[in-house]
Figure 1: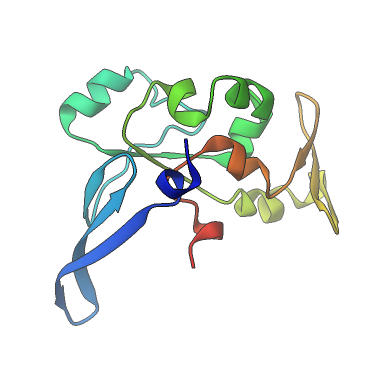
Figure 2: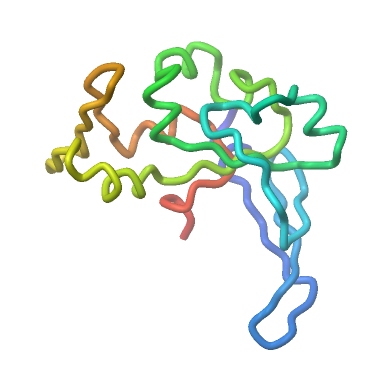
Length: 146
């Protein structure tokens, strides 16, 4: 996937009323009308559903969790499969969180250093670094939006 395709993101405002607004997000993988409900695929899958079923219902975006994906299956597996879309078998958009919530919620299990955050986990020692998001090839990541 080229950088120009990977980084394409457009938001167009459709309507607004005071502080409420509606719009359309266009990514390299889909067009999403907002506001939108996003199914959660924390570890790369929406529980009890196949990707085709989620798509057939009409969803065009799934939310995944960077921290949990880093724990399992790990960035090497996702990278070997050419990114999160292939790993999830999901052709539409993916929003990943920053993993920053775990920096606070798992404060007793983490060590903050200049290069990133190291977590102790039940599976193995995990280093969550900002570069992990780039391995995912997700469409939206709040840490990278300007």
